[in-house]
Length: 475
Ligand code: FAD
Ligand code: NAI
Image 1 (cartoon, rainbow, N blue to C red):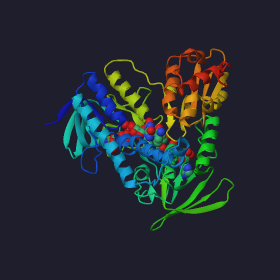
Image 2 (tube, rainbow, N blue to C red):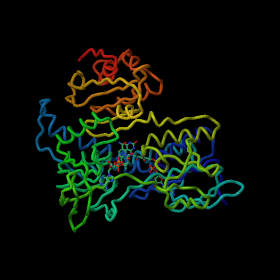
Image 3 (cartoon, rainbow, N blue to C red):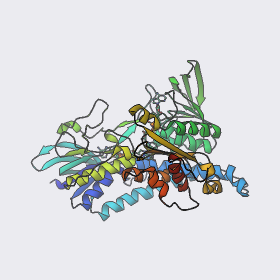
Image 4 (cartoon, rainbow, N blue to C red):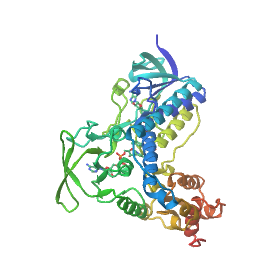
């Protein structure tokens, strides 16, 4: 006898579990199916983000930053550290504990919101008068019937052709987060978000890191000045970054990996690494979903095809997060999740891709929202830009973190904020002000006239807004 629900959510990542919670809040009877389990056999909802993405990467970034500060920055503060060392096993165990706390937090939220959680693989079995039949197979086995189905099955790492992941020597994101000892030489293919974050973690812990990027430009999606400053800072820290490379061979041996490539000048290069992280993007994950059973269309790249409201062409089936078009970010998945649940309840939600912030949690941090100067030029939009450096900010000086700046771009005529670009301490937190300004249609003068507490890093944002108006106070 099938269990019946109003809404069945397949996938329990930030997209899926948020959709389940919001739908339950709105009065729907909800089931959420997720297949992830921990090493101890317990269910591990939270998806890529919680298990092998956002959360564990930030845990290791935090640990490795403490180590770097203790080794390099503490002396400036008059703090002496003797016998500094790294116990990678303890660091990884702490990361696993943080992950488990988040898994358990989500299970608590399922109970609190009376969501029926199933630990197993959910696959479409067909559609009848009562709704869609979805089978669960795994730790839990069940037959569910739901009026609506939200597909939130996420993404998986893309491998280099001819170099499959073994997670011993050739590592995907999960492997990169679980290297049991600091590699002497670490290769990273792809200078994107994962490459820079994980490259930073292992460099701080002592690896000699070489990052090999195919595109000629470093961080091509970011503001040009931000990308330039980032490359300067990362190079100064010791990340060996090469752009414009073409990987020609990856040959895993017994204890190391030989990599061959041509550099930007076309010269053949090779190196042997103790481990190789391959972080060249991710692809949608629909294995096991049996999308064909209900005629759910996938595009040529494997994404579930949806309209602007995350509706598929199968009435009643929606898809959100990494498995559909748009940026592969946890907060983008969450926004779509809330929007779909609210649309099912008859509301008129809207997700604005232009105000989704991007953050790279390196040191300095990088964050942006809205348009870059390059995009505005391409679009022929007349704009003004204002920039203010952290070197001129009292709090940044007190912290000893003065690299970087905040830039605000605003419409030349109306002064409406069109974008904010930051590289520097806590850029991940500062960007929220830019998102808020854009959502409220604020002008740079609005930001400049708001009282910002002193001494805070947020004064750099205020000064960048003043710079748009040509009247900084502290520069
Ligand atoms: P996922 O999180 O991938 O969740 C999908 C879930 O569905 C998984 O548990 C999967 O196993 C399960 N599933 C799949 N198929 C089925 C099925 N048939 N039945 C049952 N369950 C199924 N984003 C940020 O915004 N900030 C960050 O700092 C950040 N850091 C990242 C760091 C790394 C190393 C990586 C890899 C990613 C990072 N991301 C970050 C991206 C972020 O993790 C994803 O955008 C986000 O997890 C997408 O959420 P989702 O719910 O769409 O999919
Ligand atoms: P990415 O898209 O950020 O970067 C991939 C990089 O690899 C690009 O610079 C690309 O040009 C390069 N590349 C592609 N093919 C290559 C090749 N053959 N050789 C060399 N370089 C090649 O993808 P990444 O880093 O794998 O991360 C996947 C996704 O996860 C990101 O798109 C992002 O959305 C998400 N993520 C988000 C984080 C955050 O928000 N802080 C952190 C980590 C991941």
